[in-house]
Amino acid sequence: MKHDKQITLAITGASGTPYALSLLTSLVKADYQVYVLISSAAKVVMATEENIKIPARPEDASAFFIEHCGGKPGQVQVFGKEEWFSPVASGSAAPSKMVVCPCSTGTLSSIAIGASDNLIERAADVVLKERGQLILVPREMPLSSIHLENMLKLSQMGATIMPAAPGFYHNPKTIEDLVDFVVARILDHLGVEQSLVARWGYETAKHTPKN
Image (cartoon, rainbow, N blue to C red; front, side, top):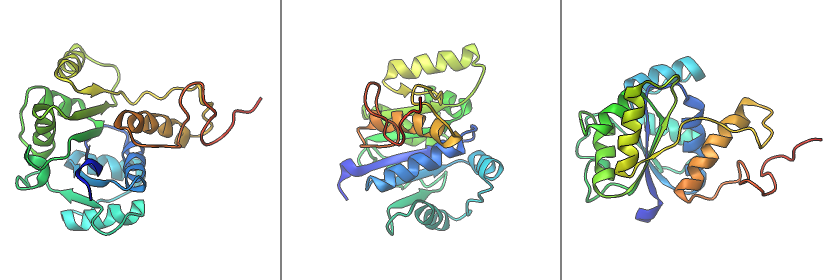
């Protein structure tokens, strides 16, 4: 698979499992090779929000996500939090694009200070230092001054901050519609074709608003 069709997706412990699963499925359908990094807290959130139990072994977790998203063998690869020899840990091999979705404020803070204490933090640090595309999708409210300062700092470093804040101009009828809005905006920023939600001023992608 071409290097420009590779992406890193980190899933952390903020609420927002549906965003992560929808984004992963969309990337798989777009024929991307996806390197998945998932924190221990994210596994707890997934079990709570979607009753999904992610296998402990990375290879088993990879197989789970491939089956869940309808991917091809090897298309989704999960790495453990200390797999320092994985491609995402090095600027010479890491994909140039990374999304942290959802992004906990703890992860946001660690990335902002360059902690690199686990593979998620290191992968984000690599994308920043290599001048790649880093998208962070925080889901928290209210936001403290610490959170806002970290977001500003990361924005000034070149990261894109995309809070999980769905709009309503596409006339959402279901929770899935609200999830689709956020995921569609992420895909738009990544340059990935999507038909979840039409851009402003265009005909709606999935359904036409009723009078």
